[in-house]
Length: 120
Image (cartoon, helix red, strand yellow):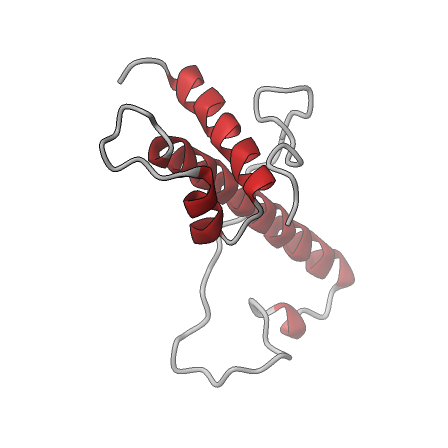
């Protein structure tokens, strides 16, 4: 599992100029087939294929980054000493399927994200 800070910092020096492509889902009644992936296999023009595949890669990367941020926020909230039902780092690690060290890092990352949000 990657470290919680491995994704580019959205406030940092790596600006994103293109909005990621929307993630369009295949019809649920379609048979699972490794050959069909967001209709990329039907594109004959390599320029179009590269463009759409790049959009999808960026969209998945952005979605993964956001999901990690929400994991970190949840971990920080679960570890909050003000909660009567607070969880230990070990319990959070187990729920997140992480090591305790990684859970500690995620809790800290989540606290930083929550502090950046300010009071709600």
